[in-house]
Length: 471
Image 1 (cartoon, helix red, strand yellow):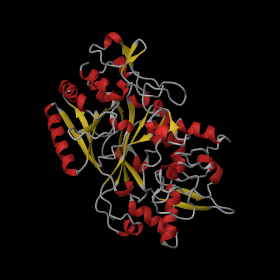
Image 2 (cartoon, one colour):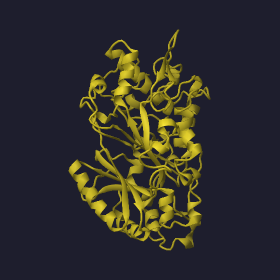
Image 3 (spheres, helix red, strand yellow):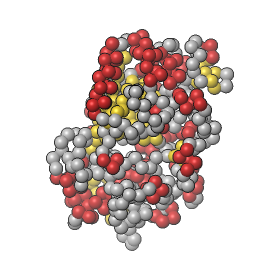
Image 4 (cartoon, one colour):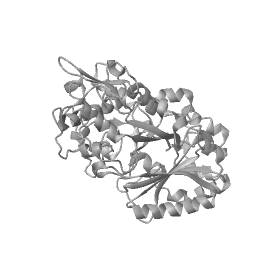
């Protein structure tokens, strides 16, 4: 079943399913719970004000969502028999020796260099994600929330600012947030003519069927153990995890001048510089797909299907238009996985590893126009980057799989020494631009993106928060 019931609709926190485009300013507060009893009292008071699954912006309410780490749940007294049922990736956390290798958190990306998160920094118990329509409103909301938190013994470890750039661009100058899964059974699914991008709700929200026709493991407890009788039912049990989702949060610093100077060094003019950068990204700066527009950026407003309703297998299986090793083709291979000769099967396999991205950029760009020549030459005003946030029903088969098997793999789809040109931390990596009869290889690509913080969270349903507040 993929359709929401009335109770599910009221239970899912809004950020899981919507990016709050109507609220372009945001701040993330990383929290430490020093008074569990006080924290639970606060959760009980605010639970009904947490933003739900709704696109409607209520001007009378703060727009905020909250997620917890394993340590946070443990501090608040979630029973051990419930805690042990979470996926072990969440239990272990983002910083383990094995996971560092899987995610590419090595070298300068290693957690010992991070500003927050991991074993070397203060333990994080939760994150409060706050959104507003303007800066003044955001600061007013933050001030009120911090005052509430201070009174119940919650320490704000870090305040991470976020914003939305014009045309929804990220700091390298490319339009972002285009290729998102369409959730089966939703209004968007019913109105879309493209079925390859439709993914079952259970890939992202616990309690629903996923692409394997299964329901992901979820922490459950006996009916008698839910004294307040607020949790959703799952057969004869109570389901703490239903309507919740695993949340990945990573702060990624972008070296914008280095990115564009590398492109300039490899090419003869501005047009070729932008084309090479687009080959590495997998789209033109406007967001137009290279498979549909191989010769240049149309720089026109394209609709949803023109931006995202394309495949690679028929028109570009060999990567002559959009290189196989480009960032976007690696992160979503669509119908062109070489593990199969069938486009539908490829789409099915890819959809088992999709993620829902909900991140925001941070820092003011050095160019208001996002023109590459200005981004390359203008001195940086402040550090810029991305607060990468994504939601998953299973951390191992979604975020970690994509990061390890598609982005960081240097032999992805038959390539050689060619991990993701944007995200991989190695500085001796190559990037191949396929051609006929000759391909071109760019060597010694420096690191453009640096991980400076990260943690795994779980964003529970509202009823689970109410249970947690009274456990």
